[in-house]
Image (cartoon, rainbow, N blue to C red; front, side):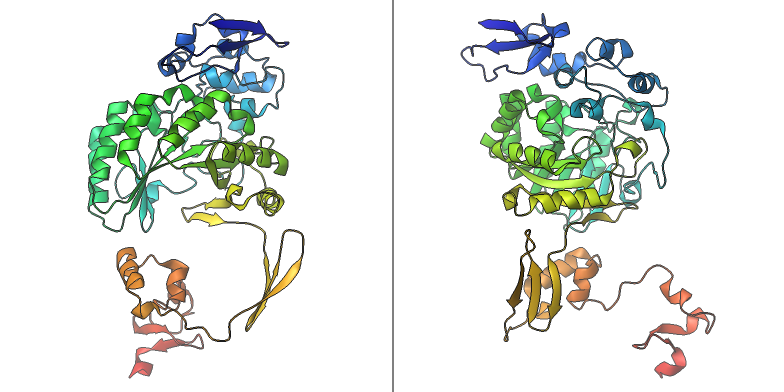
Length: 465
């Protein structure tokens, strides 16, 4: 039985008695343009995908567009536009600052250039040993399996390929990617991304998961997705039953605002969590959308209520089209300062800058270690309370040279230990490219140099004898 009522903004609220065998109950309001769509269609992910909004006429039917939005939608060189009816139904049609609206509807500001703007700001292509596979960190890889999404975020970091139907990955690409993973025993973790892996035909996704799970040294498979937000109808029993065959399987879901967590989304999250899939949330810090400590707190509290652990808060990348979405880093530090001590520790994401140029994720946050001296550390808490921690007088220091775990990891990471390698004594310095040549200052031929001594002066071969 279906009851239909109107609210003050001419949206249709649909309340359904749950018939036997149904695992979905409608609760979110719909704009009146979709009032007569049968529930069987509205709740179908295939119907949602085939009725996405992507024209000025379609968006004008549900949103009172601004001149800036009209210009952005009409621009020839803009990033792809597609919005599922479900996600579009969450837009406030009269508020240009609606956080859903600002994430998904183009504006003319996307075409503005800005300082340090890049097409591939994370240098993913430079870290791809085979097409579609990014191997930046020692023990894990990013596997791009599609260029398509249910809807397209206006600040997409992979806008150079995402949304382009001519840049799709094929089975032959998967073969090469999976062969690379199988031939590199240091890889213990693979993240499927794209695009959105949950947009793939289920049989294709299942085939990829089967082949990955057959790799003995691969411990964890992760899926990065925004489908549970854009298209919660896709999270059905058939999909979930397939996914849970491949444990340990984790899922990171992209949320930016509490308004995205509707009853339908909550139900999709519950199905995934009940299937034993650990859920994390990734959020991009966006100007005018979630750059407020209390807006962020509302989001993370709603996430943990739905058994989703806030994982990363990303600084918006230096990607084309996203200049107007960026905030200063200080805005993110302020948010973390407002969360630490004011909410549960497991509800606080790690704020990171994904380093321009391909350096990976760099954690950024307030400083709580104020000072140190031998045997003492001075720390402060979220209130400004300052305390001293007394360190032990006797401590048997861990010796990496005699530790089997350290020796095993060193052999697998093959020179990519970074700063941790300095602390464990694997090397004394990390030098920028050309460091030795620069510090010759013309004093010797490069071929005569064997290093720099403890005082910083160049040692020549004659000094070595």
